[in-house]
Amino acid sequence: MATLKYSRQRESIKNYLATTKEHPTADTVYLQMKKEFPNISLGTVYRNLNLLTEIGEVIKIPTPNGGDRFDGRIEPHNHFLCTKCGRLLDLELDMKNIEEVNQMAGTNFDGIIQSSSILFYGECGDCIKKS
Image (cartoon, rainbow, N blue to C red; front, side, top):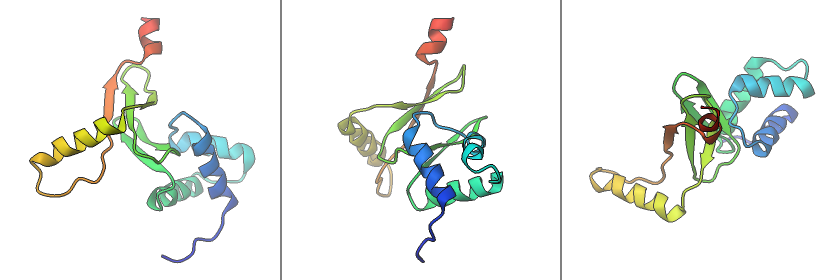
């Protein structure tokens, strides 16, 4: 792969994702970037998010009915999607348990599972408290 030319906008997107615990959509990233780069286009944000995902510096999390979300935390971890409010949260599982899940999944699979990403669904604590 050719050397990637430095981009202040791409660096700012990467830094934003690395410093937020939220898992924003591209539109949310765009609104955040408009504060720093008033002339940035939504297309530029999408291109940079896709590039950052492609080179492994950001994770893209596809979610049903909500578009893709993005995460600057790239080490293996799982997520929880609240079916009531739509928040996407990190779900901490012991790495040993993740490896066990990968091994169980590989038991009846003709291939090698190298990693996994599981999206859990339910109702978050905030929504439960509001009910």
